[in-house]
Amino acid sequence: MKDKWKTKNSSVKCCFNGMKESLFLHRIVTGNEKWTYFENPKCTKSWVDPGQPSTLTARPDRLGKKTMLCVWWDQEGVVYYELLKPGETVNTDCYQQQITNLNQALIIKRAEWARRHSKVILLHDDTPSHTSKPVKDTLKDLAWEVLTHPLYSPDLAPSDYHLFQSMAHTLSEQHFKTYKEVENWVSEWFASKQEKFYWDGIHKLPERWGNV
Image (tube, rainbow, N blue to C red):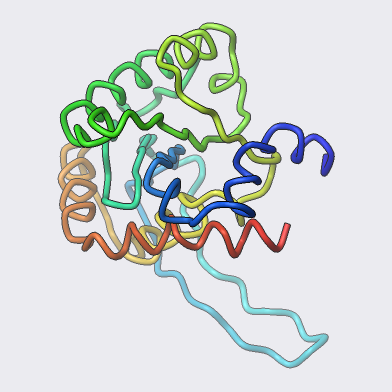
């Protein structure tokens, strides 16, 4: 797995070793999916002595009503997101369309990239819908560089270690009756975050990368 990691990401590794971070971190757009539950119990942490069992923490009912949030963001903020209808999941066709929608959002929200002739560096995981041939063909047509990461490595996925972690904390004790309530909450939560929040999430990557 380590060799595979080095092979897939050799060009970006060179960036970390031989270039100033400011020259490429602004090009990274990262995305991921998260189940958002209608019922969110209070999350608590417990400290115990070594060797002693920890206190169980309430978790969302995985069989309860939920909707999937798909979001892409960079160091300036959220570029594009979708909240799928309850019961819907991401497949190849869905993700391919989402990438097309993301590209349109980038043209509108990040027009400076086109002026600088910079290419997008897309950071997403290796789930089948992300790595299918139709999606790869779309990314190739867009001339985006794809920066993948090893499976089961949330410590290297900004959405997991930063965005979703913060969101989960705020979701604690939130109870939604309708899809529209979830949609409004997500929109307001994204808008409530300052640019520094997103900047911090992207700029943690070099340090985390160095620990791999």
